[in-house]
Amino acid sequence: MDTQRKTRLLIIGSGPAGYTAGVYGARAMLDPILVQGIEPGGQLTTTTEVENWPGDTEVQGPDLMVRMEAHAKAMGCEIVGDIITDLDLSSRPFIARGDSGTTYEADAVILATGARAKWLGLDSEEAFKGFGVSACATCDGFFYRGQEIVVIGGGNTAVEEALFLTNFASKVTLIHRRNELRAEKILQDRLLKHPKVETLWHHTLEEVVGEDNPKGVSAVRVKHVDTGEISEIPAKGVFIAIGHAPANELVKDTLELHHGGYVKVTPGSTETSIPGVFAAGDLTDHKYRQAVTSAGMGCMAALDAERFLAEQGEQTGKDETLPLGYGAPEGEGVAADEPQDA
Ligand code: FAD
Ligand code: NAP
Image 1 (cartoon, helix red, strand yellow):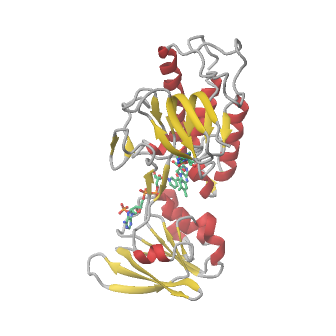
Image 2: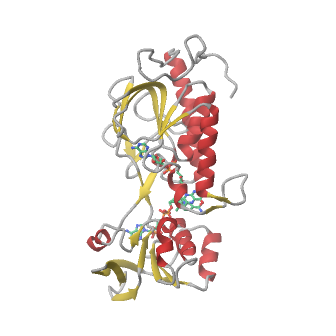
Image 3: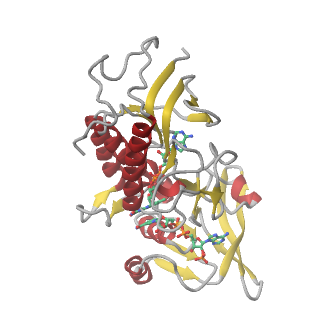
């Protein structure tokens, strides 16, 4: 059934930025609705150990995100399993349409849609996606027990994926276009010392080679970036880890972007080019792209949204005519400009 919801603050995205905005938005009594999207918990659900989340020497990415969701919920943020397919920012209140058929009307919006894995764009990569080609080692590594695997890339993701895949593979070859990794030194150290890992420098992936029946990968054809020489490496699995691009589909035609698609915000804030629309996390951050920086920006976005709504003098976004009840009953809401327990 198509439903209409009204909220003072709509948060789109359920990674560290979204859930942190949920915690702060709820504590500011904005009764936020957070829409989770296709990947509840965001990118950290695709990894294993996280060793740089303050307060946890080591925590599993999916566990951390379950805790963040529970925290946001406990503070009073409503979490909705839906995907926003269309966002109308032409006038306030803003209108977001969900895949479920629900329409969300919001006085302010926090965009926290994060980033998605990039692909090389090769025809053979596309042809074998899901049949030997993957961008998620934690999701698919298990299928390659005792097999040879290649990983393409030289950043943190590539090195972590390669190390994780050593749990299953007989051999992992990391193929990188330069001879220097971008990954953190501690990860490089682990990779280069690992007995199951080989590195192939100055090479790019030219083609994924495989069979159709049964469909699967048997090798990769790689090219030396200087000499152009082509060689073939046997592999049953090919993991592409060449970085992430901001998930800007909802706003690419309406908000100012920069640095190749990241949402532009006023320096030192999360304000976008449209008043009342705020952006946080990997969607806006071309530089740091960490869980902790995303969470920090989620906090900033909720505080910016609270201030914006207070300046607009809006007391409540509740619509008594709507079929679904939510928020505090009339008279129990807290005025946006009342002092809050932050
Ligand atoms: P994301 O985590 O990308 O979440 C985006 C959210 O938006 C998702 O919930 C998605 O469902 C939702 N969404 C997208 N589109 C829509 C839509 N249309 N409607 C509704 N919702 C939508 N960082 C670290 O600090 N430490 C690490 O150890 C670490 N390890 C990593 C390992 C891997 C394999 C990867 C890929 C990244 C890692 N990172 C790590 C980076 C970290 O995960 C990101 O910086 C962080 O998750 C970004 O948070 P975010 O909230 O901006 O977005
Ligand atoms: P990244 O840091 O942007 O690295 C991408 C890698 O892929 C680079 O080595 C790049 O090569 C290579 N590459 C890009 N395009 C390519 C192409 N067309 N062909 C071949 N190689 C290509 O991306 P990431 O590793 O996904 O990391 C994204 C963000 O998440 C980073 O900020 C990272 O710190 C964060 N992250 C953090 C952790 C952690 O803290 N443990 C773990 C994972 C991710 P060049 O080096 O030559 O440019």
